[in-house]
Length: 330
Picture 1 (cartoon, one colour):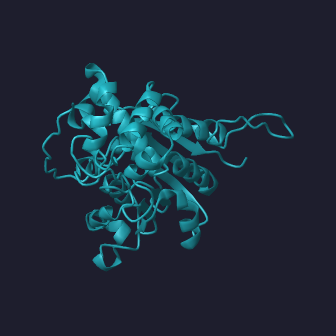
Picture 2 (picture 1 turned 90 degrees about the vertical axis):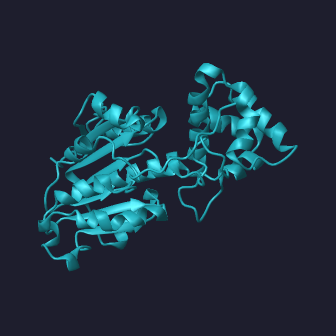
Picture 3 (picture 1 turned 90 degrees about the horizontal axis):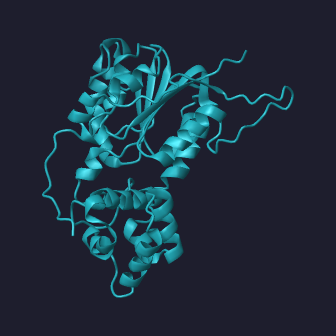
């Protein structure tokens, strides 16, 4: 059985990954309108704001109310030009939106924004979530099986584990965790919950422990928790909806800069950049017959953290950055 590790107090809510590379990828215009759909600790937003002038505007999204505590630090970091050196105008260049990024299109309409010049997404889970023992995101702590990014609504991981059918559970673990023995694990979960509800991370670990080989134990546990988290938060659906909206909202020459952490989300991002849709379907022009993507790929080879960054921030090791530019209407 994996032993629970003692919790550690961390100073940072989240260490931004590929900070310079991802923000450089936006090719920021000082008077442009930009969106950071994954505010978290505010690291990327802080850097974007520092490059904006007095007429620029940044909208930052996060569905977790815990992220709101980081707003003040980000506002204070804005370049004097963005805030005209006047603290009273701190909000003029920055708007925080407490919402899932899947509603990007709705919120831009709400703020009368008909186009954006760039969008950044860091799809990794904040260190804050992994290190908050009460949220249930990590198998390191014995905690309620919650895993909701938005603590106010939706099913918890415990709800899914205790109510989904064996087939549904197997599909979740296979599709989102890429666990080859997903059916055996699902069968064990269904059998165990018949004896008593599975309510905590420790309850779940006790059920699935026999199915993980010691040499791959932690990696497979992490995949199982990843799969449940993705299902709880509808992450793949939200990502597809956000990217589709971003494609419509981006102005000509606008940039899309996205950091992914696992193959499923990376495939979706690669699809939208190469074909203009999240399924990767090549749609030919009805007149000329050519398949045209609305994007021009900026980096044909994915950008990954340097060995130095991976050493400083081990959670960055699986990160991949893709950047694309909306084609001009020529």
